[in-house]
Image 1 (cartoon, helix red, strand yellow):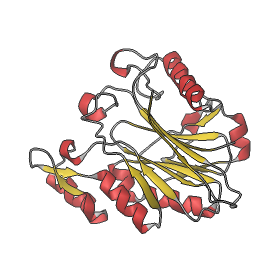
Image 2 (cartoon, one colour; image 1 turned 90 degrees about the vertical axis):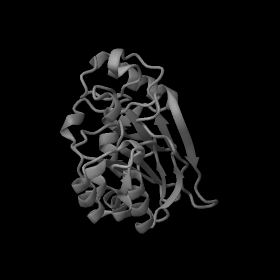
Image 3 (cartoon, helix red, strand yellow; image 1 turned 120 degrees about the vertical axis):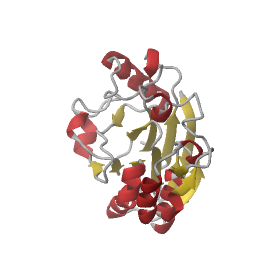
Image 4 (cartoon, rainbow, N blue to C red; image 1 turned 135 degrees about the vertical axis):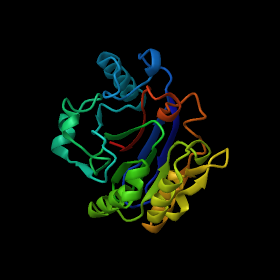
Length: 256
């Protein structure tokens, strides 16, 4: 159920809160077939009851009664979860999460898990434990090129974050992310480090490298970069490998 978990502590005497980061995998849930078994997405054709049960399982495993999910559209909008919204959340998210279209979230409210769903795109979890601010971003090819990472960093700084630390979760590696040469050139205009080659030597993209470069430019400290490739790892969902599949999550929250 939990692939990775990290805790980032505030500096001594800062008055901040511990920040927690988790990445789920595809094991230990209630979904069946192509969505087996810990699918957390409502939009992929899975049984809604199974998704609800899976989200509840994740909440229990993390000790979180409130999780925020959003409708992801490969854009750069950042959603702020304030105290009023946080009070209405459950472990399954909001009743109408499709009303919130965003590819990043931030909050300064303790005890609220910010979730981003992925199945090849790059999940980015960020925290400033001293300031008590956390954020998360869904960085696919388009969102990364358009600037979702600097957008979420800027939103965190607007809430008072200063020393931001980041974790890059599992995503599809360039070995398995073959694209047309023209598309590689287009994305490389926005972020040159993304230009790569696949295992067979064809044009490919390294989206996670673009994320890492953007974090560096934005002044965020990268504390962990997962080496796992979603396409190559059967314990993770991969849209590129399976087309019809579920979604795993990157989650960040402040200790209550």
